[in-house]
Image (cartoon, rainbow, N blue to C red):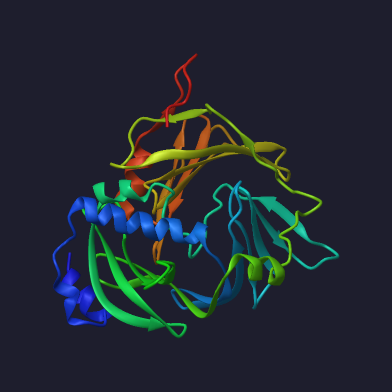
Length: 322
């Protein structure tokens, strides 16, 4: 991996060549970053850049004893927002007159990027501290998460010096090219009482479409996963236009997420196999028995391939294994 070139391009200070932090120190640092997103109330505007596409979003978030409450609102393009309320997350599309709401499988979003137990990431990433930069008018320290294998991308975070809240996050490939970038343009970190006064209640939409149902076992099982990955969600969603259901599984190492969709084939004689790649997204489709399996994610190709190759029909009488 040409991480020297990567860090020269992304980091601002000569400390880019620093050695990885000891595991205990790295774990403490990452846990502080993970906790910051849930300890502080904040509101602001950030820009998401994915390839040649850019999107501007307004965010408000405040901690709650039963789980963080947040609201993301797109400021350009189609009317769209994401609401997270005490562990439940929904996407709402369209205006008030024809809004469509769907429950989301994963409830985390920028700047809440790290898992609740971020210490486990030190098993799969080297952690380095780099230079100091300035984002949205605030000083931040750059933290590099360098993958130890081929199954995950690298991450460069710039975290607020006082709160540890990420102000910028860049996803990078092994060649040092930025795949996706989140950057705050405006940010206010608020005291608790000010947050309650300034942030409207998140609220809940009235009508859901394609509501998922959690499942413990499915039509297939995955016999092998990349190191550090586990199944973090498995649901069924109705496909109203086909009169059937699709299984949606999600695998993650805490930072990288890969989805697998399982649906009945439209015809029993279909021969199905294919792969595609665009930017940071890799996709592989294959047939397993009478099912179409599609594995895709913001993950390196070896990750998607290993999961897809490990799919087999579930053993009779046995629960599907993650």
